[in-house]
Figure 1 (tube, rainbow, N blue to C red):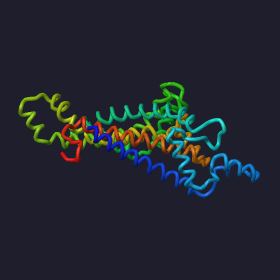
Figure 2 (cartoon, rainbow, N blue to C red):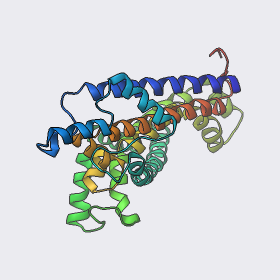
Figure 3 (cartoon, rainbow, N blue to C red):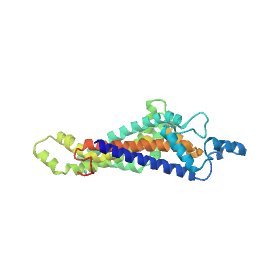
Figure 4 (cartoon, helix red, strand yellow):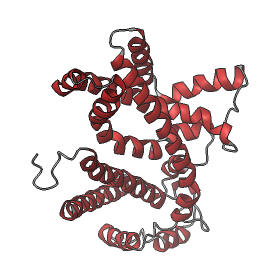
Length: 309
């Protein structure tokens, strides 16, 4: 177990280093400079800014200086603020994004599994059709369109929930639903197909022949094995929900990292873009790493060495 964990950790660190390197190169390959929006400025002022932020140094020097900063968990200063660093942006924005993403993840997993199980147990009947229609809508309709529809009817027309901002629990409901709909639909379809496959296996028929109750067969045997494909993708889904709420945060005026990231792109704020990308990538890689380890706990048949079964 330890050898496998260390191996996966090594690959995760290598992947993160590749992402950091590629992002750094791509950011500095884009034409222009981050001070273009400041308007005309004396050449001396411009040179001082370049020197202060190390932008006058060769690219490889900037790269190694940035790696040195990252080793100390310092994402550097923002080019657009003299008092706020990238670490401050992350400290202020990530708890909000995490709250929204975690809440959406719970909704997506809970209702996705329920819809998938119900659909499989009532195959080709109205619960199956109803669940799959919801899944198709969730996959087909982009989150920003769903968010707009929810705001128009639930918040504006009916006045049931507040429109935007991030002040109370009621303010989180609409953005949570908008963000959770697509992963919920994906989980429901995946769980349905997996359950249908499992329910047709010989050991399920054997369990029925032994006189086991339907609830025991479904919970103890069917769901436990059918949920494995869902667990495989949960890491990516969780990371995407936590880090991929840019549009939803902008629509609902949520002060999370998504809003910060969008502004940093418009302002060409290199440290904020790089810091956000590295931070998001770390979360994604970490979640995949956790799922790899958890997968072996759920299914003891998986061996940790050599990749053999």
